[in-house]
Image (cartoon, rainbow, N blue to C red; front, side, top):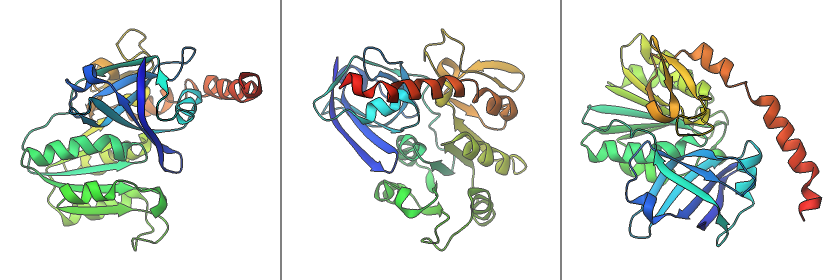
Length: 278
């Protein structure tokens, strides 16, 4: 059992959880993830590492409440315990001195990309950040990114940032106006696909993080397999970071729908039995 040190809602439907995990934190690297289990009857879910504190012995993850297990996590509070926290898992993100790197992220990916952006800055890169959200109130950790970013861009639709465009238009403008050597993108599948497509004809190295595909997280179940280039890869053990230009996005979009019916049935059952649990 591991104890929750902090759990709070950052913005609507996006939550932060900090867990006491001294054994895990000693080996954490940017781009890796952990597997959490919210209760003894739940499933193991992959959450990207958003931060860690070796002095406190804690790790921090940011997640979106989309299914039964993540909904269960939102019901937990400081002092509660969860039965499983395994990690760090996956290969670390590639950190080197590339030049100017654009970090593009949205929803839960804003938290997930932060340690990568921080490490890239520390490695001597010029870091630029592009945050995608429907509106101002869905953006978090702006202060963190502004501290490490040479330039900070937002793609939003509410007009707060003098911008009402979706990310393809904003990303195109950023790429045209700034010499970018590398792009790292984390967020929904559409955002990562969009970034990969926008940079392909420009020959800008682009890397995406695909851990939402996972179920087991250790290469045993095969649920996270995907085609990258001419071969089949597993997001959990071969990734989660992959070359966005090599990913078969059509297959990936199709496979993302595989468990929709099961997820809906699980949520309906959980809601239906809520009174019994109380």
